[in-house]
Length: 397
Image (cartoon, rainbow, N blue to C red; front, side, top):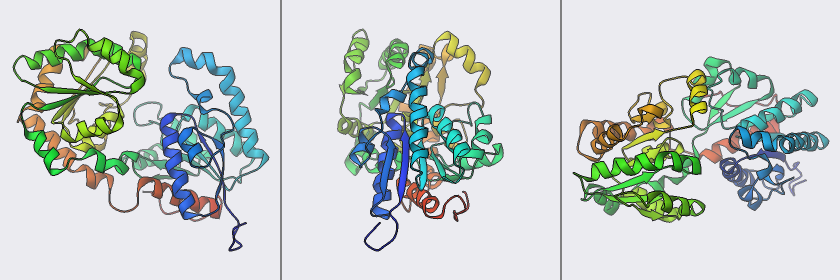
């Protein structure tokens, strides 16, 4: 009970991945600011623990990438699923917030809803129903009261697919725009010669291994006619692999492994060659024209061809509603086409101008004015926590 006599709210939170832990931690901090005395239980990582969560078990127990890894950890994951649901039901919270990790959190939601229909359930981050398995949207509706979307087109997607009430709150990258965007001096560096070009071969070992040779050869091909200052941001744990990978490259980039160095490079870069992923949205928000590429194993590619929908997997293209960022996947990823596309976005070309003009519209599309994404998310969570499943929510976006 708070000093003013109002009941202190209790929130149960579950995150199963590093990105979810970051989102969950920021949400917790905003909830604490808006509702003093709020108490948290659940599962999370270092960021959520720093915000006051005592995790029921290590979040890493839920993290597995790839079919073999999932099968190996399946007994542990199933045990943790039972423990999580039991903890929620043993002391029902005012609201249950499930952050990303859809394969785990959707099962938590379904089991909790079946056992105690009165607990409001919020899902933070939409599964990628706009690329594959669209049936997940309607499947979420019976056990999710509010879905918090990171991307502006997602509410319409869920409305069309029969998903739960969906509220666009904004992508966490919007809270880092000051780090991504250049000062006047850095903007001038983007126009200087030789151009600073970012090399971003991925944040997973498999990505670096599969893309490394082609990236190195494409950069060498461009470098035959265009001097470049190459910078490759990576994570400290991946730096040895990156150094091994670039050892055979004719043009060797400067490697930076801290977040501060990464964002300093972003603010001065003229163009980038990147693995497809969230980094393409970072580049777009930073106003950096770029080329994207990706390659997976043969079996994964055969499965993907049968289940993926749409004409692009690039987040910037999906947000823009047009395929402004060239992407080369699988057999279409060849050194000549990669080099030609990169050369065009470095130079003063129509291709570069198209990306520049498109990215300039992103502030309006994302709606960057007003509260931060995590503050918007906290508002929806608090409405459900205080009003229950029948509480008044703002109209979905």
